[in-house]
Length: 534
Image (cartoon, rainbow, N blue to C red):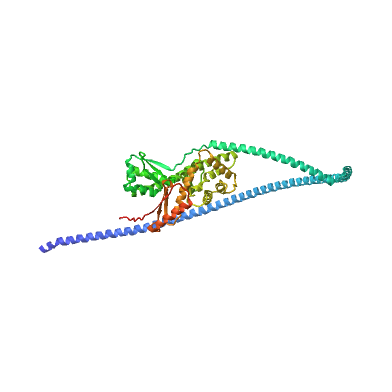
């Protein structure tokens, strides 16, 4: 009994579990059945909905087809109506064009008929005029025959009266008329020539006087010395240097003679070449300002001064071109013009002379009504050969013409340069004006000094003789031409050869130059070894 009671709760729990499982299974089966039923009913509903939509779409498609067919018929009818209207309109336009063309053809036919009638009338009139002219020509021929007969009778009667034939009478009359005309012509020509000469002389004097009046160029006498001011007299000793090495270096590098005398606070630079003198002056002023004066510094300052002078030469050429209004010059021509600033001719500054000739030629060209710019260009460049005449053999006229030809100047300008001293024949009016302006500029009082020019030529010739020998590097005439210093190339001239070179140069100077007193010839041979510590 106790055992049965002990197992009773176990059986009760088992039954409960089995009932719960059964309920769960039933619930699951009910859910599965509901899902199957829902799926089937959903499928059936979707199928019916789809069949309904397909039926509705078919009905709409049928309606669209019916509407399209109706619209197509309507469009077709409208297109037929429009086509009929276009055909009718085109037919009307064609009829109108045809009618207008027919009217135009009728008008042209009427005009042609009228023209034919006018031509017929004109033809009849011309025929009548031809008949009248034919009759007049017959009468004229008869009249001419009668006139010829009367002329023959008159000639016969005149020949009988004068006892001369017609040919003799004609010859006599022509000869008398010829003599009278020749005499009258000679008188008229003489009068015209005299009048033209007087008028030309008067006109030329007026033009030249007007040109001189309008071009009053300043004249500054060129000298052969320059003065450099010193801050104090102690600077003279520093310029001379120990045992004179500074002054010797400066004179050797520049070719200019330094005169250091009792003149207070001043050093005189003497030399015939203005370019060298200007280089020496600038270098000395720079050394005085810097205060460090020794051979190496002197050499450096001389090189800087040379570059500065080259720049000044270029600026002088550009300023001359600007002042005269002559533009478009080649850069090398401008440099050569600037070099004329340091060139003199018989004491007259060549650059100022060229500018003066340019203005004079331009004024005279304007008075004569010819090309002013061409005359001014020829006047400015007429002495361009003097910039290099000490470097190139030949007269400055030929050198200048060659330079102008080299730098593509016009043939008129080249002729003006070549003809301004009469070496070539002037081919243009401007060439004649340039020659006249050159003569006017050179002939005015105080423009030139003969003695200075001959002195400078002698010094130039002295240097040319020295530099003509082989092995000579540079030469400088100093001490107013009483001394010439010659630097030789050490690799070509040795110490023994330099002695013979001095004697050869002295003999050449004695045979080719005329000079007062004596000339000291000094040959300098210097060897330099330069290296840099790095």
